[in-house]
Image (cartoon, rainbow, N blue to C red):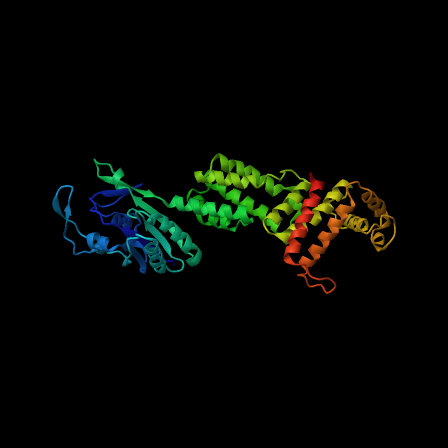
Length: 438
């Protein structure tokens, strides 16, 4: 079971008593938001081994932590007031926490800021669940906490479960109740934005899928599937994942038929009209823009657009494979050959080879590889005005690249291509073949 860790910064101010509330929760009256938040989080039911980490400067420790404190001077009323330290209050709560005060510097320079970061990070263990109270996290600390969380997510696999802020200034002065504000959505937005950015930059959708499973499934389970916005976002991510997998695994027929893409586009419109995370809508629009080259109907051009997408996302082997097969499909389509007829697709392959070697007449081994009944079709393809010498040369070049790539360069008859040469050749072929699909 993951260890739960409550982390809070303690300030130096003289805090007045009030109650803190959120939803149906209302705390006991207290000077300290920390004790109210511990009540709100129901920490008394946490497992043994959980930890409460309190970040204290020397001034905060002296002013607000030590349980020996009995009174402080309240300059607002010019009187001494009884003022117990937070340490004593937490002890009386009898929580199943290992309480650890962590002395930190004031953060007056870059070196001290990094010391705060380093000391806090060292206290975390792999897989921890973090609950942050940022009420007294002044100056640089809120930003440091967000950065620390992302850093620890990556290196220690932590999960950020809560970020809260006690807004004393917004209290109801009649009831003396102040709100606890949930700031976790800010971190969640950051997670979703990074995940969407990862897709836009690399074509990798894994992080979006992980967020769908970790954040959307619980919402849908609790709402018994009735939360339409959460369901739309989940279906959108699932559809995007299907589209990406079709490209990653070179599913040519699916790419051309575009059924998965059609579903994705419909779902995208629903997301933009009403997104579960409102600030995420412009990010979803950017993902939508990445689909601009795709047709929702069956179209050979979708295959070419997929090859370009793979190349732009550094999926070079997939780009070469899809590109070559979609060129064959293009000529199949023009000459009434079903694009999924793997036997008759060979006619187009042979036509491209014969054109490259200038063997348009019935001679040579390649003509003999085609049945007599298919030779008229082969002859028609060879006279196709779009089957130029340049197309045939680029197709042959792509064949060499694809073979070299698929065989890991382990071919004794030819010198293996350098990585840059492979990439440049694929790019050149994409640019040259684009004229066929305009």
